[in-house]
Amino acid sequence: MHDISISSATNDDASSLAAIRVVAMRPSLEAVGRFDPDRARKRFLETYDPRDTQIVRDGEDLVGFYVVRIRPDHLYLDHIYIYPTHQGRGLGRNIVWSVQDQAREMARPLRLLALRGSPANDFYLSCGFVLEKSDDLDNYYTWQP
Image (tube, rainbow, N blue to C red; front, side, top):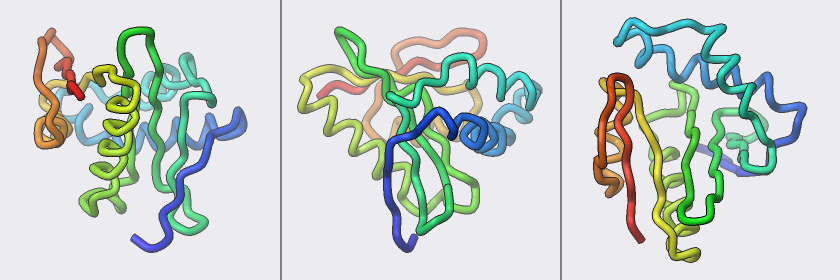
C-alpha cells in the first residue's frame, strides 16, 4: 500500500462502487452458485446512500469502499469491499478496526452479515466478531465494544 486515503462518497460514485462490489463478491457468490452481476449491482444501488459511504483510494486509484449505517442501538457495517489486487495487505482489517473504534466511542455494538461459505467469515471472526445466528444464505455477526 502506498498512499491510502479515505473520503466521503458522493451520488456520482454509486456506479463505480457497485462495480467494485460485483468484482469483490464474485468469488464468494460463484462458490455458492449465486453469482449474478446484475442482481449484485442492483441490490447495492437500491440502498446506496453516500452519507454512510466511505471511499478508499491508493493514491488516485479507487480500490474499495465501506458503508457504516448508524442505528439507534448499534452500528451496522453494511458493506466492505476491497479490489482483489489490494486484499491481503491489512487494508480491510484497518478499516474494521477503525469502525470498531467508532462503535467503542459510541458505546454501541457493531453488527454485520457475511455470505455463508465466504472467506469473509474467517476474517470477521479474526477481528473479534461473534457468530450470533445463521440462515440459509448468511451468517450474522456482532462485535461488542
